[in-house]
Length: 355
Ligand SMILES: Nc1ncnc2c1ncn2[C@@H]1O[C@H](COP(=O)(O)OP(=O)(O)OP(=O)(O)O)[C@@H](O)[C@H]1O
Ligand SMILES: Cc1ncc(C[n+]2csc(CCOP(=O)(O)O)c2C)c(N)n1
Ligand SMILES: [Mg+2]
Image (cartoon, rainbow, N blue to C red):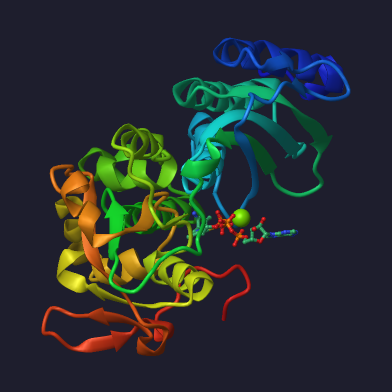
């Protein structure tokens, strides 16, 4: 079946298709009085709740590569990376505005695939896709998502409340997204090499990616830790500071310490890294701890709690205590498996303009 060129249905025909795909997300949000269709979305904020807002861009060749990324996964990731920022405030997402700039190579079906992923993720998180903007792009695909969320004022968690003596906690495991990216880039290079040599497409030159599915899923289909926000609320735990890990553990720990005016000491042996990430690191002769510290795109939560609250999280396997907050003069350090202290100021994470 030939693909339908977007020019056949035009901008407004495309928006109608997008609106139909967004429709199922509206049910979960009765406070949204108007979604797609007018000049603005209309939202009735609920009573005493504080509103939080975040926005993140995803840019072709910077955040994704369409040769290795299914469009529905990309749509889901665009929603998840923004929900992750809402989670980092200990808040709940309510609605999203989605803007896309579409390159000439895209068909109607490709845009629909992208929105199927967004709509599926939005439903999982209970947020509505309430509007956006559509443009053509003269270069690659660009996706900009803005999400509004809500939280009770006393539960709001910022980056600046950590105190010396408190525990530093991290959710899930780290390093998987970097492992997935390395694997996908390796497979892409093999595939391009193969084509450059004019060899016909042959599935057997590619690795069987099933055995790497955990790492690849971390990279292509991350989930925001809304489950952790629900857990924290259910146990009445209010972290003193929190941030999501988008640029690597080291960078995010520095953000917390700088804004809280503290130092930190974390322990290499306590950083949660999955067996499959370690296996990929061994295979690629790389270092899983470096991935955890600098890889980014984990969308796990890094937070601090008073020592007395340890027993509230002790039995929850999704949360690991990796160290403690120290005085500002002590700096931000990692104690390695031999007990050597490494200054994390020398190990920073992802920087869009970094050298
Ligand atoms: N172009 C911009 N104009 C205004 N504010 C900005 C701009 N870029 C970033 N910010 C603000 O700077 C702060 C830090 O942004 P940053 O993107 O590093 O954080 P983040 O969104 O948590 O991280 P990530 O983008 O990796 O998820 C945020 O408060 C953000 O709103
Ligand atoms: C093709 C391709 N190249 C590089 C990367 C890695 N990458 C991109 S953005 C980012 C950090 C978070 O960004 P932001 O701070 O904008 O949220 C990382 C680790 C990728 N996923 N795909
Ligand atoms: Mg950002």
